[in-house]
Image (cartoon, rainbow, N blue to C red; front, side, top):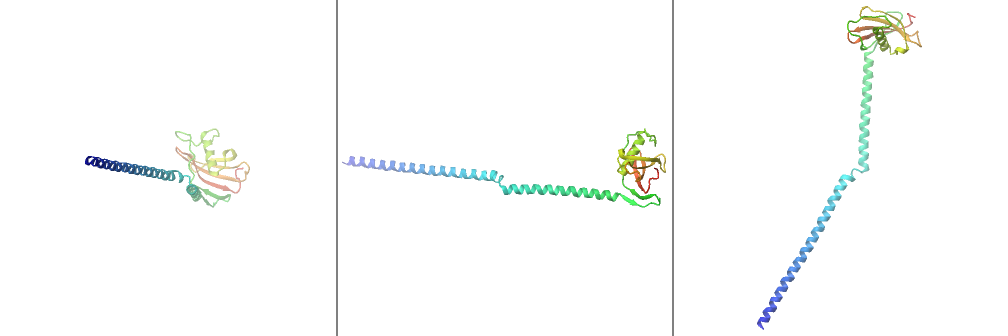
Length: 210
């Protein structure tokens, strides 16, 4: 009888141990399952947040409008800057142009400006030429045109004469083809290596070379 009781006790103890192990395994499985679910949920939340930050904000109409408004503002500022530069340039041109009166009774007004030499194709010692076939003559005509803003093709050149220094100065009287009575007397000076430079324009009351 004692041996039988001991055998039953051992079986009971073994059953309790096995039951405890089974419960522990079940709890571990449940805990692992919960942890895995939590990891998946957290991962999905992180991915969703990254998607929102990277893609959603780029397609946000408000931000697109802000970007467009900023771009338009920059373009407007650039346009204003260009207009301001043009105004400054025009103002600078106006400052370099001066109009005065003359003692010559046939001169309506005298115009002076900071003209630049027109450039030249000539090399070597310059010769002040009055031959209509010479390069120097053609360059004189360019200087007269630059001073009066009358294209050579629309210029009637009435007279060309020597200036105070015959070697380096010349004077031309010209008008447009349409209005020969409105004539200009243009003074030009030769600059070595740079060509003829207008120095003064006189607007005539009458064309005294017609």
